[in-house]
Figure 1 (cartoon, rainbow, N blue to C red):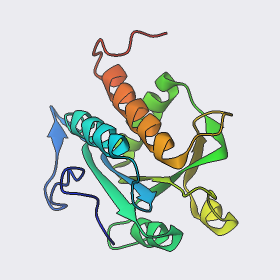
Figure 2 (figure 1 turned 180 degrees about the horizontal axis):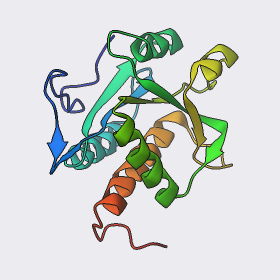
Figure 3 (figure 1 turned 90 degrees about the vertical axis):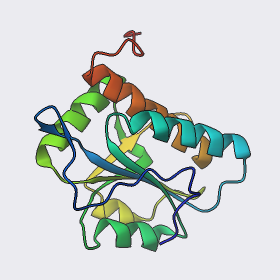
Length: 168
């Protein structure tokens, strides 16, 4: 497994228990396939990972291929694999917040995976715990990563009643 640049990685030791008040904080990894070609994508990725780290234990991970995603999901510390796929369920920002809140109660780390330009294989889709779509429009996979991160940040601000999300 290859990690993204040190700027991108916000990893906390697995053995520590993270709490917010009396509630555990959800652990999230956002994985993508391949190197990032655009510096602006890296900058936005880093910014949203930093923002999300106020609310969750989050890491951004660049992986070689789909097999690496499956290996991470089923590794020593299992993760619920959440695929971004055009055939997945579309969620509003509020519904994504509710999803994160439910998953936080389950205490199983989440692995959000953004595929390469060809999407995911049928085998990977079968192994996913949940498949979500960012909408019907086609997005470049690097931009989809940034949109996902922004929506994760928005979802946490919804849960914390932060004014970032004004409900429109």
